[in-house]
Length: 384
Ligand code: PMP
Ligand code: GLN
Image: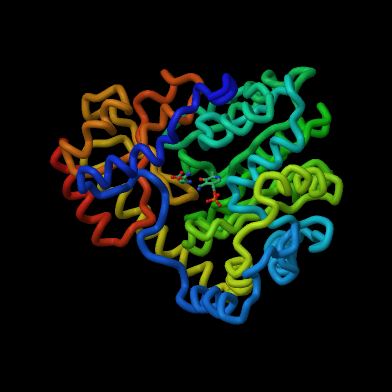
């Protein structure tokens, strides 16, 4: 393994899902739903396969039906107009979008600012691009995680190329506010920075929290690459259909990298996701209502089991502090949790450069059946 990747080893998600399988534990670690997405969308994929749509290389930028559906989605939900031919690119999940965007836009030696804790692939992709990551830490404060705008400002140097955002934020469940995003936008304009924003949890926001794409703020459309994915919104994480929307120049740059990573991906699934994006509002409302109830169930259960809970405004993860249970190291805690309680979770420290800042935090996923969450909670209560 080369020096760029040496520090990364195996992703925590593979390690923890293997631990869950080996010990027969309830897997609240890796974030994937235990119920597949809508039947009619599965049928749409089968129809595409049978009809021979997408069984051979689809067009490089993605099939036109999907690119139009993505453009319509951005316009109808956020008032963001993108030309499906020049400003939309379909990728192999958001994971490839992140990789292609960073490989396309970062020069060796460039600094990339990422909100810490950050999704693990960001660090690896910044490294593969030869960039240097500069983490800005979200700080726990009164039951939520907040972005310190002075710290963000201070992190920008002459070598900063871009700010990598993630909202709704994995693993903390934070949804960046209009005020925070406006401050990021002003900073980006002032220092002439690009923004790459990972919005894969855009539909998973609760209690009236609003997801606001930074690209919709004044002046930001031209300097922003917005990343989306069907995995979270439609509960098909195995299909790996993601996308970016951006100006023609940025889209073309990302496409240059994408064509040599996968060239194209998952033809028949692209047709199915084109249909999924056109599902009625009731689908999206239903998903939110279901996950909101599950968030409450797990958050309350974890609090009763003795954890300090950071109730998420978005995503399907809840971050907890394990110190009230007398533990301080999330790694040790997660490694012994299968034996102690038959549950698997993720130590947030893996998402930090400042490992000590993340040490006592542990993330649980709630995209699981109600009875599974109830059983997990009853097991976790044994810890108290
Ligand atoms: N970004 C974030 C913040 C995520 O949590 C995930 C989860 N898988 C991804 C990107 C990757 O998305 P995909 O499965 O579409 O590659
Ligand atoms: N995004 C998911 C999570 O945070 C997992 C994705 C993966 O396994 N790489 O749990």
